[in-house]
Image (cartoon, rainbow, N blue to C red; front, side, top):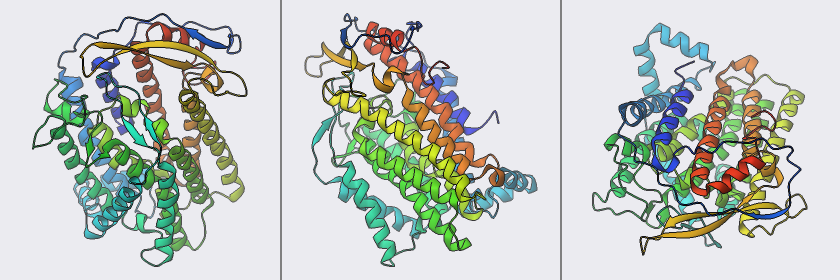
Length: 497
């Protein structure tokens, strides 16, 4: 569908990020390389590139008003609709079309009624957030993110694996003790989405005020302020890069400790809900939940790496980033598993097992790629990659010193070995392999195209993210990144794209 939310999201973000000064497209072009294997080992130095300054972009009615507004209207609505739809006996697009044809007003009333916040959802989210805060306070080795354009360098206590182990354990033990059914996340899903949506919109307003030093609040660092594109765009994009509240890093807590944790436990809860309704385990749902659980264990193991990714170091904490993690992720990233609760996948254990195996390979290779880069960075390029000394390019870049206001020179290493020598974003290929396997595990024959929405959305999102990341790296590293692109000519799929 041309007006699908995924397309609107990526069209909006493409225009927005193209307009933002920090992500101006570089004129550097890709050049073919004879073979990924015909390269010298060791560190190749690249001449320092003069820091580039992007010309300020003008206010655009389409890019900075209409598209963000359209996104902020359609995506919350879509989350409410899918919450209602997956509670129907046959959660398919045909059911939605029939309900809309029977009466849009009646459908809207049903959707609102099924997603209205209530006290039980408030208790659930309060307990969920409270437990996450307790685990967040566990001390751990301090790890750092990249230096921002204004000289800030965020620090994080590396305690993600404590969270990964303790939170699911407490969740399961609480259900075993009779405090709540294991299906609790599904049982209150509609009201939870409604509360997250309204609360998320209000929270983004608070972050907007904080980044602009309003309501008695102050930014947590130098990377804050208005974009100059108006109130609406500032609310959408955010006014602060690394906001903190009470010493808690907002991005890390929302994106990882709430969003990813909910997704991790949702499959377990939905499988329990399906079993209580049908009296048996659904192979598609169980293996989909298991695959996603493994994927998210990998995520928490790699959490510090995520805190150094483009999601964190470029995107400010506004509607796009923060509301998206609070509401869009619990609603859409669980869509395929949630749709199997009322209507089982219809897959046999052998068929589901084959799809599961392919998806698990995607998760494993995705983990390997992320781990290669993380260890390479943490050891200053000394860690072996596939048993060999890694190939690297030394790149120089400049950031503003927050004390002197002058440009300070820094160096970084670009990894050209392992999966990073096969394709510049090979990890996305493996992530998409897993995502499409999860959609297929829902049973396309029983559910139609609905469970594939997340995978289709993620495909467009990751291709767009790869483009954004390369624009950022070309601007930051100049000739060094152009050299990397010449040595590794493929973005995501070797010899294809």
